[in-house]
Length: 246
Image (cartoon, rainbow, N blue to C red; front, top):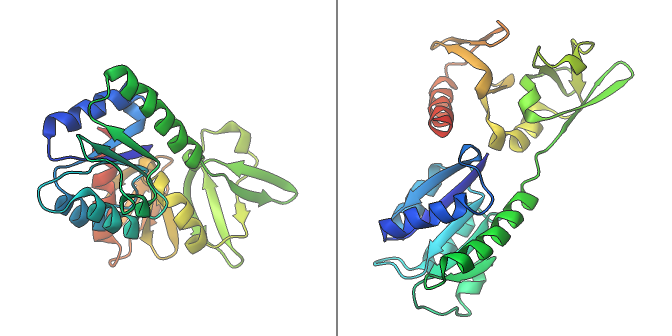
């Protein structure tokens, strides 16, 4: 999933950018859009966002302009792709301090805008290559994609990985181990739908079948307990996951 933010005080232009993106190499099922209509709104709401892969940012807004908004955005997301988009304002030395990837003009034709957006989307995809988690079982080594993992739990040395039961190639792997600890794997997997439900494990949110305040059930019937300190956070992450899906 790619997370794209568009910040512009013209709501019609925000919708236009979305249409251009969806016609330039991204399918609607693989992108989630965040829409912001002022620099202040972007800066405030970014505090609670876990990931933004691409930001399309207007340069001329009523209160906080694009330069200042980009500066604050970079503090929260130093590695995200930033693209300025302006009606008339030309690039300045200050705007390049935020390391933008492109500087677009709103006067571009649809064809020119699509050409630029294809380059931007290609760069975003290249930067966000899906990771593999390497696990072992006796003398076997496996590389698991995030979507192939139900949950990962702490172990004496590293962690235990529990693969999805419907993946036949892992039938022999009833206990895959990994040398990395759960707290080392979480930063890698959090952008792929994983969350803490307990200090002892992280879970793939897409495979939760049922949740109460004290436990959750996975699609294979596994029951896991939820720590009281993690319940609210998990509830919020599940809601975000459902919103992105639908």
